[in-house]
Image 1 (tube, rainbow, N blue to C red):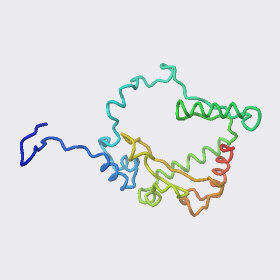
Image 2: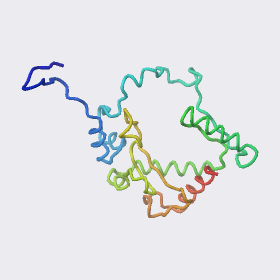
Image 3: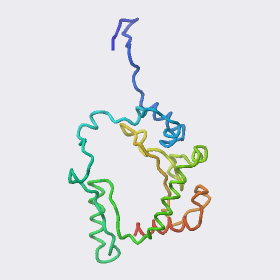
Image 4: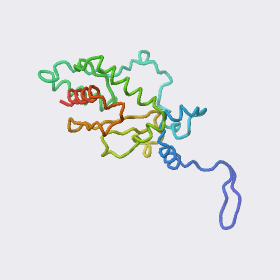
Length: 200
């Protein structure tokens, strides 16, 4: 980069300064999410998603968990309603604080219910962009939201993911407040049941 004298200052020549806030806003306004980028045939990961080198410095190049001795915490929910409640809560808190995520087993939700819910989520993301766009929102008062990166405007680099979010805070969800794909009564009832099971 070179600087040259100008009228009352210097002119910077070379690459223009990167405006992350502008790129994040433009990306968010497309309401297409990461899936929209992939479907458009993007050939290069946009700079918005590239972590600065200082964020990557401490990461190991070895991603094999077995080789590094790292294992995702597994929380066993067996007995969480009685004798093991305190242990389960402590395990959840510890995993949340140290890892930020965990796997739950023995939660009482049938495998076919989970499989059906995952299939509906996949179908939602596979819909045409225009159908999903009407549900794209960052308004946390909505009962259903589809968006890309909850911290898109705060993080140093965006995460390569799209999210759908349901608000079951009162144990009820108005079918009209969710996309048609999720309005099936069986799906809604099981979603609310899953939320109820996990929030006790």
